[in-house]
Image 1 (cartoon, rainbow, N blue to C red):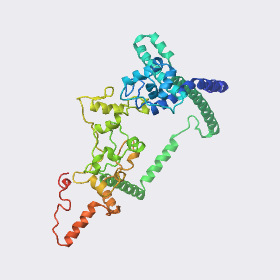
Image 2: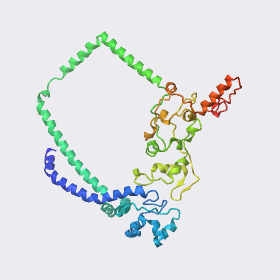
Image 3: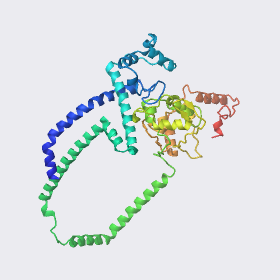
Length: 431
């Protein structure tokens, strides 16, 4: 290992220079395609896919179907080309009458070329993948074709592996030298061969027997163990039925951090029952489709259909190509996280509307949770402490205005029925 590392130390500098040059040359085109990918997702992905029709036509092969000058004019200002009577523009407008191409005058020619280069790179990736699939059953000729279409990502990965190998060898070489110095400096601590090791072991056992005969020490140790087991048992029994931190695996990886945090969607948009009923309610899949009928792509999956959104489509038997629903629809089987005992009554509307309690008071920083879990203990003590600390704001509150009016009636000796005090609410009996 030492000889290998010395050889690499001598050639490391010229090889490093060569690798840097290789990386710079191979990354020029990749950088343009990467910029094109960012621009595509920001401006084009709302209506177009590289493969497959969406609101607009499929973009795969657009570099071969149209001349570059025509594409630059079309993307810059498509409506003006339609108005000018360009035959290709009129044909496209007739094919997609409900989704007119948007003008993008803010994009420079270089940026548009980067988008087109990104489309071409996606085509090359798919062609390489198809060639790789054919090689599995087609022999060495297909393998050679697939390897010839190696992407820039593969080249960069190979460069990274080589650099990592150099770093590992140099680190191992330094570790070996350090260990050799440590051994040389501590030779006197290494026992000679054949030295009797039973002596120290016997002394150790003798000390243990002596400690075992000390009754005070044994009593203290037994007392500490009893206290530890008692406190652990008490804590375990006290927390029976408390599920704080409970985080089940849901059928769809719905991220509150993305929806409520990044996109700042109001909680009541999905959980509309929190304002008007005991339960906050779990939204139906149709609520999800209000957005995800158009929003299907994800940066995490390279602009393709997210597998989590695909689960919503399967539940609704929805075809994104035809945008039609099928007959084989089924509900999404979400797992309930916050569970109260049957004898405990909690009304969301009473807390959210009357008391003005924020969702985060009970559910914690929900806007930061990629996966929702039970933030609060939801025990009786926790609820009582909250009720002791929360001040009642009765000004301008219709609920308390009714109570005050009822008290005034009682003072005057007027008749006050249970209905006046909310006795007709369904939740009084049915919950």
